[in-house]
Length: 560
Ligand SMILES: Cc1cc2nc3c(=O)[nH]c(=O)nc-3n(C[C@H](O)[C@H](O)[C@H](O)COP(=O)(O)OP(=O)(O)OC[C@H]3O[C@@H](n4cnc5c(N)ncnc54)[C@H](O)[C@@H]3O)c2cc1C
Image (cartoon, rainbow, N blue to C red; front, top):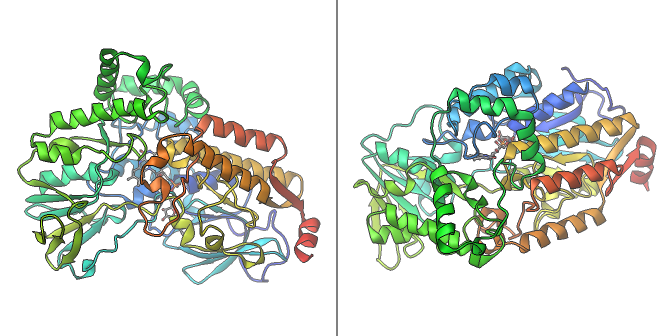
């Protein structure tokens, strides 16, 4: 669609292209946002810094990359035709297949014509005299838009560790979140993987099978549950397809994390040892993220949590033959589930291979990278691990990282980064006071990364699209979160978080993986069902907590 001034009007620089909405990012969130808004007759421009659509699945091409929410659930629900026609091959689809799906969606809904690829949004500034945003992109252009939607992703700003000598390393350096498009062959090479979060846990078994030697540098051991991945049978696919309306409803409304599962009616300490063990064994055998759903108090009660953590630690000791390696792999500094639980295929067993070494960098920190080695120092003195290639599985500046990279200026020229210097502040994770008509999809203060992200993305996109339609129908021009509603929401998000065990871990949920980042629990832990209800109630009450004004009032307010 060309730049049309359908709801936006006067006041922009005479020759600036004007859109109703600029969307930043063409991952699953940005693509669905475009589809919804265009369906409402709005002019939309999507900017994507990557070379194609897909977001996470465009960037994270590392060996073993796949989803850890089952594909029949980690998929769009907005189009019944789409969910009926797409065939997922495996219980957890691999990255190339998820990327194919993203491309299929882009083509099927004719999205590409409104998406400008290879273009980064650098700046967005609110012009109070015109009630529009000026959006500046890396191709040197500035366009005007009534609304800006940040679909920039919670896990899209790869974190490159600050290690002395990294740039002098002679071999190839890869980040899992920026993997090359051409195949990477580790055959005959000595490889180092730095980090042991989800991406490392997925890639280590695959790299180990190829490399001559693999050295894994671990600071913090993480809990991982076997995926039990397998090909999906036509019967399995059909049982979802036939019941999709009800299954999607349950995921949205009744589940905390947006994943359909049996809900426990008791706590871990309500069962005797044998019964509890049998339940953990059954979930371990079933595999996947629902392990944490065995009991209803694993995220709340440390003694209950210990029973699940002990079970997994025992499993690690059973799988890993060398007792010292097993001990290092057993997480012992955070409750299970308080960091994002990982899902793996043969991760622990990989450490039984003769070509794999585990190095504990808590007791022997990485001192520097030399041109051909990773050098550690500590209890064992200086030690060089000679390697030909480095894989940085060091994660992301999560939730706020990609937003912070854009210079966003709201009322009175205030910078969002300045407002969020002590931690992100939003109302419902959707808007931040002082930044009118700027929406964030799965922003901090919403369930986002604690959920099946497809459920959270669709909920936010629908809410934002409905909200823009509401404003348009009533001739309203400017919407803004009130400071009071925002403060109350921030307090609520913190209170709920602190009633659980989550803040006990130094996790990326807390910003703890980024030196200097304020440590605030960022996602909303109240569950997707409860959160949806809150958002719906706010809308039903005329967007309570948001100020909405017509053109004249907004201009008068801006002028006074
Ligand atoms: C390896 C991995 C596995 C995952 N597995 C799961 C899973 O199984 N289940 C689950 O629920 N979630 C999973 N996630 C989370 C995943 O990020 C979300 O499920 C989902 O893909 C997010 O979609 P999005 O569109 O919100 O963000 P993204 O997919 O991150 O897309 C955001 C896009 O915005 C672009 N962008 C950012 N800033 C700018 C800018 N300034 N200008 C232009 N473009 C910009 C980025 O390039 C990116 O393409 C996983 C994440 C990773 C990293």
